[in-house]
Length: 319
Ligand SMILES: Nc1ncnc2c1ncn2[C@@H]1O[C@H](COP(=O)(O)OP(=O)(O)O)[C@@H](O)[C@H]1O
Ligand SMILES: [Mg+2]
Image 1: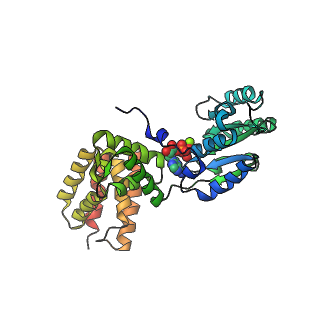
Image 2: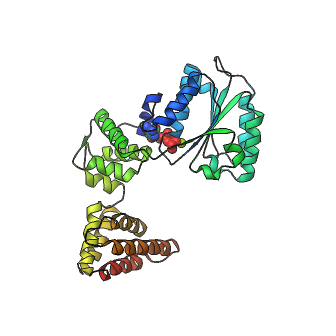
Image 3: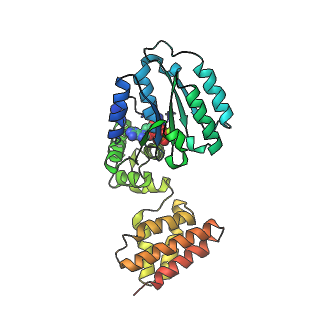
């Protein structure tokens, strides 16, 4: 039984393994070759290579001794900026270990979890230690980072990993792990992961525990999502006026995949745009109603009542 976690096993070890972020990698390489770099701010969604690239930078800068020259912190774990400051201070006190690089690196994950006040304190910490340390800050939204920090960093915006790159990652892992991706499975993995390579690895690993042959159905089952065609069928039934059958199929699908009313509404909303038997106006009205149902659920409404109401609305869209 393998206990290794694939997101770690397949974490990029060098610049050319950080896929689909070519412009970013190119600019970062240039800094690293000169053994000189500014503070960096990495922003973008989860699973796009921010942490991986920071680790690659340290491997490339420091070689063997990269562990000792890197301090990894997580802003949301560290119970406030004071802990961050103390740890940075202790780390910055000593010089870079056996290295030709005149600084050490501090990687601060989830920087946007810090309050504005904490960020101002962080800015001072960055300045106080700039002689000996370079900061790499990572965040989901750069708009949540105060200007005085942004202006002291080179900012890099990571994009969700492109479909073609996600397919490459899925096929590569499947090959290395001896898995067979049967028809539609690779596309399903990529659709479910939505540009998040960590999610892709995790999903693939959970599938592999169940079977060496990975099917589209298995992917959706483990992701607790219906196959898009099944949602289409539900909607088509409602549009044909067969409300009872639509309702039954939706409930059966929810039970067999184990997803919630909220997930169902999100999936209906995703399928609405491509629904063939509706005209543009109908699709837009359906999307609008999904928004309302989603809001009501988030306010605590009953999910079955809301789903039935949504299906009834679909049935009424029938021309
Ligand atoms: N651009 C990428 N190229 C290749 N693998 C990636 C990429 N981004 C993420 N991954 C995979 O996902 C895992 C998590 O990535 P990570 O760098 O921690 O994401 P982030 O810090 O942006 O949330 C990595 O270990 C790697 O397996
Ligand atoms: Mg990360």
